[in-house]
Image (spheres, rainbow, N blue to C red):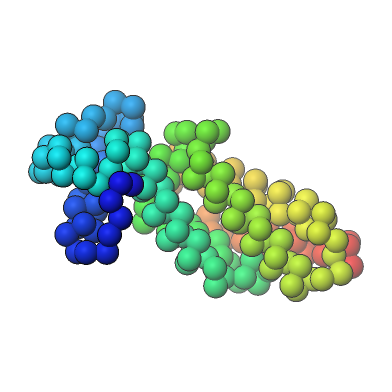
Length: 192
């Protein structure tokens, strides 16, 4: 992003540009969207666009950064080791509220910087939370557990998003919770 600022006009202009790109992403892929289309959708001129962003990819990365910052701040207070589902509920509900961005992640699944950042964040949180609660379990074993549960959870979430089943959010939250709870309890009973 070219112009960072806290003044209201800057935030409003940037928000309009980002929202316009998100709307266009409902219709076509990022590579097929031009600055002209975003400007037309946002009802702004090209100069306004270029005052705030370098190009379409800059807007796209800013949207992803916003998504990442918002979700991680919401997840920060949720403890992965507490098997009440709060972490997964918060994650799934936020994704459901931002389904266009979730679909963006899925489209570029293997090359998604946002997905890589989310996985790294979740893995670090998982390891730290588990280490705080179970300090006697070696870090490499917690890493193994986190890799397995994160990838299983991610696989199910991708399927839910691809199949357009975000309306079944409570069912999938409970399924993820139940599966992870069983895995974690069995893992801990075998390790301790």
